Length: 92
Image (cartoon, rainbow, N blue to C red; front, side, top):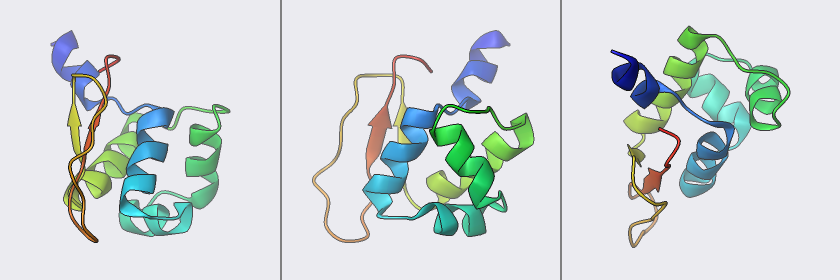
């Protein structure tokens, strides 16, 4: 059970990397996830951890756009405009 919960976690670093991969602003991620830009900024800057529902919506918005989170070392696919990428983390 704990393993599954940890897989659903999203770190601030992963959020920033995923946004960069998609070339999304915090405003765009906020609109796609229904989470405020302020919450995303404070999360990514390490000032707060959003509630589980907000983290889930952020992650789901990124995954719906094609981002893939793995438990391996960080890696990216060879991207063309609009293609999906992979973000890894040993913290997951």
